[in-house]
Amino acid sequence: MASSMTLALLRSKTLDFLFDTAGAIWVNAQLDQGGRLAIGEYSLALPVIVATTFTPTADTREIDISSLTALWNVHEVWFPYTAASPEYPPERVLFRVFDVGGKPYLYLDIDDLADGVDVARVFYTKAHTLKDLDSATVTTWPAVDDGLIIMGTAAHVLMSRAVDLAETTGVSAVSTPNLAAMASRYIKEFRKQLLKRQRLSS
Image (cartoon, rainbow, N blue to C red; front, side, top):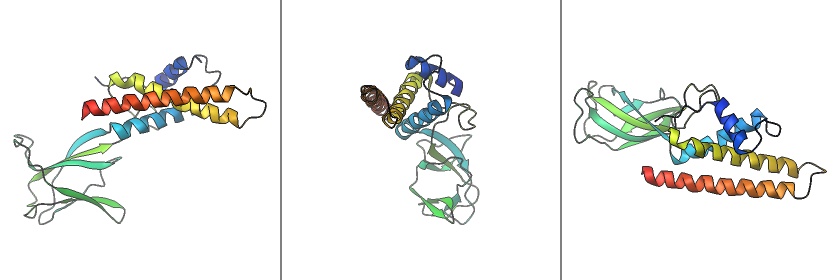
């Protein structure tokens, strides 16, 4: 089931996790940046996989894929592909992705040139998004991973706070080491759980 997490909810739940429900210590900018870092790490381990189709131009093996928003990498290509009656097994083909003048192109390693009719199904990866963060309109990870994202966000804001206090004069000698130790513990646990999720999904 898809997550119903929003930016406001991530902020609130992260503050609860950090026992700062009133937001007296961490401000929204810190929470948002912590969320970006956690979502970024999560995305590297478990990226969004999206499927779309292209019809290669006749007498070519190349496809302009610059229309793929937030493209990270191409994961797999089926060619030819018939949506009304998908081939079984899928016609997986070898491919390469390269840049031409700042535009990504997909090269199909096929014997015959495309005929302008056959369709290619392209699976590609991109980063996850959180609704309302950086203008995103949807949250893309599964609800089961909400707690993991909250933990990762908390870990990163703790580390940010530890760095901030370390550079502030007149701070208690034990504050920064304690915060840094907590941050390190949560980051290690976050990455450990990410690895488990990655193994389960592979």
